[in-house]
View 1 (cartoon, rainbow, N blue to C red):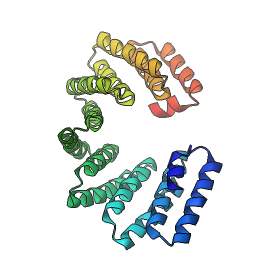
View 2 (cartoon, helix red, strand yellow):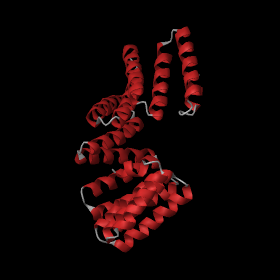
View 3 (cartoon, one colour):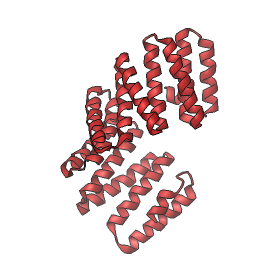
View 4 (cartoon, rainbow, N blue to C red):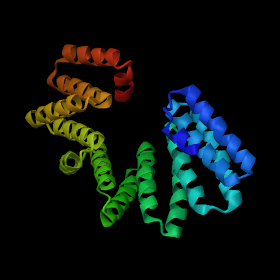
Amino acid sequence: AVTLLWLTDPWDLAAATGHIQRSLTFALKAKDERAMAMVRSATAQVHQDRGDLQAALDELLAARGIYEKLGDASRYASVCNLLGSVLAEMRRPADAVARYQEALRINEAQGSTTQAAGVLNNLATSHIATGELDEAERSLERCLRIHERVGYMEGACIARVNLASIAAQRLQNHEAVARATEASEQAERLGHVMALMSSLTTRFTSELALGRLGDAFQTLDRLAKVAKRSDHIVGQVWHATSEARGLLRLGDTERAEQIETASAEDKGGYAKAQDE
C-alpha cells in the first residue's frame, strides 16, 4: 500500500486519499508502529507535493514521534530532513536549519556520509535564505567533497550550481561566472536539465553585472535553446525573466515589461512570483 501511495499522482486527491486509507488500515490491523510511521511520512510528501504544508508538517511530526519512541535513529534523521524541507517551503528557514542540523548530527554519528551530503545541501539552501552565506558555502564544500568521493556526480553538480549562486549573491561575479560555467558543463554531460538551466541563469546575471553584454546574451540564447528543447516550464520562465533583466540593462524598459507581462500571463503568474 505504501508503494502504491508513492506511485500515486499527488494531484489525484481521490486516489491518494484511497491509498492512504488502505495503508493506515493495514498498519493499524498489524499494530505495527513502524509501518504507521512510514505511512505518515509518505502521506506527508503527498501533502507537500499538493502544497498543503501544514498537513505535511503534522504528519511528519507524528512520524518523528513514533521513530523517537522506537529508538530508530536512522529514520528519525530522515524525517528531520523532510521536516526541514517543509519548514523551508513554509518560509521558516531558521526552523529548517535546526531540523537539518539535527539530521546531520545523527547521520554523522552513524557514519551515513551519503545521507549527510544530502542534508548538507538542504542545510546550505536554508542558510542562504537566512543570509548566512559563509555557513552555506562551508556546507556546500563539504557536500561537494562527499559526493565526489563516493562518485555521485549529480549531487556534486547541484552543489556546484549552489556555490555559483552564492558567489553571485556576494557580487563576486568573476568567480560566479567561473563556477557557473563549470557547473553547466558538468550538468550538460550528465543530462541534468534543471542544474543546467540554473547554472546558465546564474552565469547570465553575473555576466550582465560585469557589463559583458555580448557574453550575457550568448548565455541567454543557450538558456532559451535548453528550455525549448526540454519543454520545461521553469526554464521558459527563467529565460523570460532573464531576458527582461537584460533588456532593462540596455534601457529597453517597454520591451522588458512586455516580456514580463506575457510570461506571467502564459505561466499563470508563476514568472512574476519566481522573479520576486
